[in-house]
Structures are given as structure tokens and as C-alpha cells.
Length: 390
Image 1 (cartoon, helix red, strand yellow):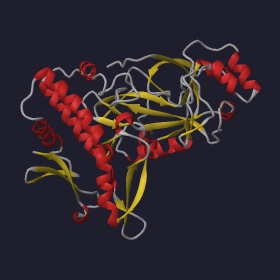
Image 2 (image 1 turned 30 degrees about the vertical axis):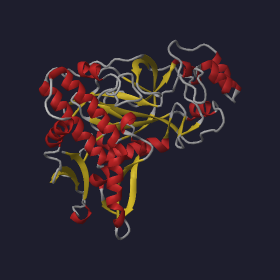
Image 3 (image 1 turned 60 degrees about the vertical axis):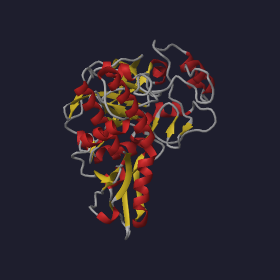
Image 4 (image 1 turned 120 degrees about the horizontal axis):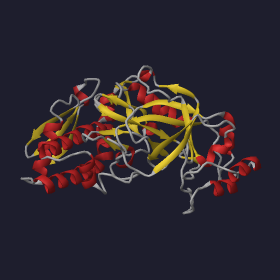
């Protein structure tokens, strides 16, 4: 499948990279590189080794439209995070090379930005401090290192059923370029290392935000794009969607291990990242978390484990249910459906979680509940959560 989107032409330069050891033997050729939009090429004295044609992927990313690898039988595409943005952070003004030249504190940088440049859409990596660990339009080493650390825990794309779009390399920008970009800022200067994440993603379709095609605003197009052309395929799509999103709702339980202190447990949790904008949908309906910089380990005392499990479910439950409703409505529109919404949802849950070792379905009178188990196999810390009322 070839992905669609607005074209973004980037110049490719050789780079020093840090490789995910899980991909030492599986990284596609030519990924020891960083990528710049034409507006920033004058800041690099050497010519690029290639010009690559990407399409837009989120505000500061780009993705190659054709697959570069196959993981677990699924085609994956190269996505580069940190290639610059065309939108100013504090106004409606376009962020182009002219505006960047006005902001640059270094006169030499301003002069290069105003000089001859390659054709293409202006995108700018700035030195403005953004989201604590990154420069606006780019990516910082602190965030990229977190994403790489999470990726290294996965069996290629899965952490106990929690699906990720893995970072395969982190490319370091040259120090001279980094200093030039650091001089472009509004109020607060980012002082860390500036890098790019090279990651593998199964599509550029998100749940609701940060993409032109999403489950939330164009589910009909998504069905057509992914070839969901029969009721059987639609039901399989729903089951894969629910299976993978329930895994996101129960990430701490799946990764829970004893902590360094007595009566303490550690596991993965989400920080400033969300299902509706930071995950992508594969053609089979499975959802892969793609912005891994906001996932990290947290420590929880024994008496707080059940509360953590419940909080994590509630955190993304609305986004999951919203997206499921869009998918189910489109399935019923195309192929028909019987029963109440809760009855149909219960059927999908049963198909999706039949083999899930961490989430079991339990009947409790007129209520169907999740029994959330844990990686430590401690029944005393299992949690129950209301799934469906009949």
C-alpha cells in the first residue's frame, strides 16, 4: 500500500546514529542519516547525499509513502520525527525561512537563511524550548532516548501485547548545525542535544488528531484505504482494534515487576501522550503507539497498584470507546447489524480478549467485567473494571 499525503521533500545527510539493538540486523539500508527541508540546507556546508520524497506525518514529522520493512507480517514505513514545522508556536504566522531569519540571534545564520535555498515547503527546526525535553519543530535527545528505551523493551513491535511503532535509530545532528538552529528562538532557548527519531510505523492514520485521515473524522475513507470490504473483515478489524487498545489501557499491569524497595512495583505509564493523537492504526485495525517519548517507568507502592490500574484504564477509555463507535457505526452502515450497542460490543470484546493473558472477562450478574491480572502473577493485586452493563 502506498500512503497518501502532502509531499515533503527532504535532503539526506550522513549522520552519527544510535541503533536499537533489537534491529541491528534488520534496519533498512541507508538509515545512518538525518533529513533537512530545503530552507535549512544552507546551514550545512556539504551537499546532501540524496533528495528523498516524503509525505507529511504530524506537525514535525515526515513519512516515506512506500514500505521499507516487514515486521510480524505487517508492512512498515519509515517515519522521521524532528524535521521541522511550518507553523509558528505562538501565533497564526507561517514559520518559514524569512521568519526564522528574523528570529535568528546569529547574523551569519540569518544571512544563510535569507540566501539561496533548495525548493520545497519551508519547515524550520528551532531552538525554542518546547515540552521540557525538545526544541520546537525538532526532537531532543532526552525525549528520543526515552522512546529508544521503550523500543528496546519490545519484541520488535510488542511489549506483552502493547503494540509500538519502534524507534530503530536516533540520528544526531552535527554540532555546528545544532548551534545554528539553537540561535533561532522566541523566548527560551533549548540547550540540549538536537536529534531525529527514525521509527517504523504501519500507517499514517491516527485516531483523531495529528493526521489528515483519522478514525474520528474520515472513517469511511479509512475503510476504503484499508480494504475493509466485507462484514468478516470489518469484524476482524474491530477485534484487532479492541485487542490492541485494551492492551494500552492495561500497560502497567502487563509490564509490572517488583521494584527496588519492599512492597513496591514498577511498570510503564503514560505522560503527556494520548491514544487519540499519539497512536496509529494498521490496515488490520491494530493500533500501535507511535510517540513513545511520553512512556516511562513509574514506581507504585503495593497498596496503590489497584488504583494505578484503574486510573490507567480511565485515562484512555473514552478515546477507545469513541473510536470503536465510529468503526462500528461504519461497519453497521455498510454491512448491517443486529442487537443493542452493548450486545455488539460484548461480542467484540469476547473475540478480542479470548487469548489475552492479562485481561479476562468475568460475568458479575448483569455486568461484564474486566479482570485485570498482572505480570507478577499476584492474584491479590488483580483489579476488576466495569466493561459492559447488559
